[in-house]
Image (tube, rainbow, N blue to C red; front, side, top):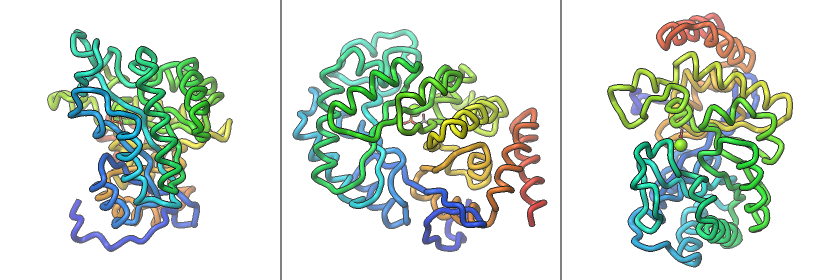
Length: 316
Ligand code: PEP
Ligand code: MG
């Protein structure tokens, strides 16, 4: 994408017929937060909190976490921010948490919320820090857990988060099992957010860190999109908001497909907001839906993309 050539974008996100699609930023630091605000983000769909822990030899105190989160949240006073609880393990082992570094298959091991289940105190102190930072900053905070596989895990997390004083709670959809039991998962949460990076990894059993497997981790793969269609249908039936915060949301053409399959908001690197916002503003909701249906008929990434291009060009 030639971003220099992109007309400026002022938001808020919408289809050409005026249907709102909030366009949010993925942030992981104070610098990211400033960039996101400058780029016109309507809020944050994924606040990665690992920055607070990654270089720590010991667990940061609740007070230190609260201050670090509040500094990021302060940039979004009055705006929605989805804070993700610690997503350690796998490619992000932490020195003060035992276990994950010795696993033979860390991506399939104790990572994300699974660490929180083993180290409940670590999770509870983070939830308390997030609740405190919400009060300090004036941002409208939601919280979500990574790497949730079952409805029972979603319910366990939601109960702890609400007990900490956080009243809008969600989970990430990154494990195929959570899609296949979406109706039950939705029963405990206020929203979900799809992590397409990990969902692709687990659908294809293909390590997302391996460049040689990038073809399988391509978000245009029909198997991934058909799974998202299942999720979108379940979400419509229950009225559950579904964000997408993986890399797929930052691809302007794929963004239209995601909306057509049921995404109600999109969260991306700040640098993609203008191109996604401008593209969505040129396509009606009906044409997003048609593009989503066309995508489901493709047999490989290239044919999916070709079907979507054809479907969308028919709109003009
Ligand atoms: C994802 O898995 O798509 C995601 C957004 O989370 P992360 O890339 O931090 O794992
Ligand atoms: Mg992930």
